[in-house]
Image (cartoon, rainbow, N blue to C red):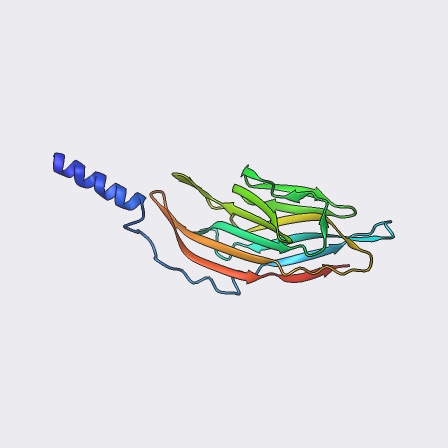
Length: 197
């Protein structure tokens, strides 16, 4: 009886720390399933010295809702160059629930379908970086199901300057079941730019 209890505890520990994996070890996420895009909004403004832009970064889930493979982590990097970020930006830093919200820019209402999970933001060396993690300690969750939208509003540049950043998106998908969750795929792509007017 004692031996069976010890074996059960060891088995549970091996499962929890992913030494034994109940699902696939790797998963191939093809480019046609996961193809992020950036809508670049050129704001209408009355400022004779500056132009203003806002971004909506769309990231598809890449898989079906029924799949046991879920998006569990995302890193989004936006090169700002000589722009000045006036904000707001969504999602914000902290432990966030999945939300659908609107971010007001100067002239557009951006619909932002935000990720769930722990969000950290870093601005350095001319880049704005989001990092979202669904796994926190012994608990975890997918950061979204079908798609997610990150928003940066009111980026100011000198007058008559275009802005079409090469946004880099790195996603990590996990296999998840009630007992364990572990990474099976990571993919990095540069998002396509779609100017709006």
